[in-house]
Length: 474
Figure 1 (cartoon, one colour):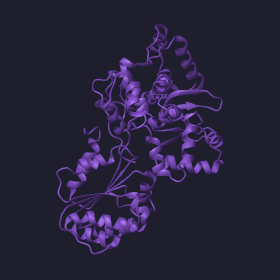
Figure 2 (cartoon, helix red, strand yellow):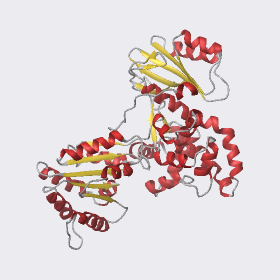
Figure 3 (tube, rainbow, N blue to C red):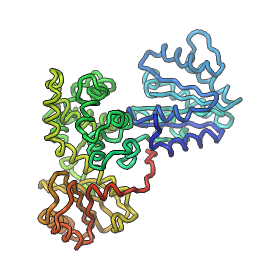
Figure 4 (cartoon, rainbow, N blue to C red):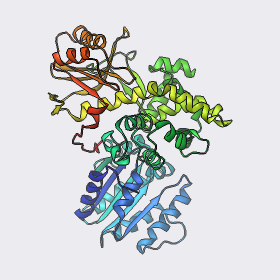
C-alpha cells in the first residue's frame, strides 16, 4: 500500500526514536485515518519493537495479552502478572537498550483499568533520566486520550510529542487518482472526504463516472462501505447508538441548531447536548461552528455540522435508500444519485474552496495577495442571511460564493455578493471570491475583476498547487 501525506508525522516519530531518550508519544485521530499504518511504517527495519493492539476485554485478559506481546523482548512473566510488574520490567529493561512499545487503541486499556496511566506516570518520573524506552500510545477516542495528557490528567507534562492524524486535504488526494480529471476528483472528495481507506477503495475501483465508483464501494449490499458509518457508530457508541443515528439523520436533513436537533430526536436540550459533545469532542465526527468574525454569539446562532463528508453523504443519501438497495433496486438508486449528485456535492465543494482559501493565506491566489486569516468558514445572522465562504482578517473580510451546477455564475449573482459585502461588512476592507463548476458569464467576470476579486473554476483549481504542511498538533 502506498504511504500518502504522512511524511511529517513519520519524521517526528523518527526524530523521537533517534533521541535515545525516554519518549512518550501520543498519536490521536478518529478511526480509518491511517494511525496504525503510520506506526507500522515507522516500525520497518527497527529492532526491539513491540506492537500490541488492545482489544475490548477484561483486565485479566488485557494483562495476559500485553505480557505475552512484551515477552518478545526476552522478558518473562509467571501466571497473570499485575500491571505494575509488567510495566516495571519493561522500564527496567529499557535502561539497557532502546525499546519501542506501541499500544494501539490505548484508551481501551485506560478504560479497563484506570490505574494503568497512573502507573505509567510514576514509572516515567522514576526512570526519566535513565530509560531508553519509546512508548507510543495510539487512540481513536480523541477526547479520552486528550484527557489523559491534559492538565490534571495522569500523563500531563510527561508527553514528549503529540501527533494529531487528520483527514487528508483535497490537494493531497490527487496522489490517489493520478489520471482523474478535476471535476471527478472534486466529486469524489466531496462525497468520501479525506479518509485514506475510503480513497484507496475508490482508487482501486476507479471510474471517471463518480456514480459508478460509488456503486462498487458504497451502494451494492456487501460492498466495503455499504454499512461503514453504522458499523463505526455501533462499535463506539453502544448501547445508545440509535440516539446517535437519529442525531446524524437530523443533521443530514438540515437541522443544524441544538434546538432543531433536539426537537427532531425527541430528547430534552440538556440530554442532546451531552450526545453532541461526545460526537464532537471524543469522536470528532461533528463540529460546533459559529459565524466567522463573531467571537461571542448566542447559542441560537451556533450550528452543528457533520465533519466527515462520507458520513454526511451516507446519512443524506445511502441510509434513506437502504430499503431499495436491500431488495436489489441498485439501478434505481443509482439514477436517483445521478439526479441529486450536484446538490450533494455542492457542500463538499464549499469545503474544498475553504481549504484553498486557508492554504493560500499569506500568499497570492490568482494574482490577489491574501492576508493571514483569523478564521475561515461561513457567516450567517439571525435573519437568515448567509455567506458560504467567509474569512476574517484585521480590519477586513473575504466574502465568497460557491456554485456547483451546470450553468455559469451570472452578473446578477456577482452583484448580489458585492451587495452582501457592503451591507453586512460596511466598514471593513473586502476581498470577493466566486467559485463555480461551470465558469462565469462575461458580465460576472467584469464585475469581479472590477473589484480585484478572485474567480475559481474547475480548470483554475486543477492548476493550483499550494505548499501544504500537515496539521499535526492538537
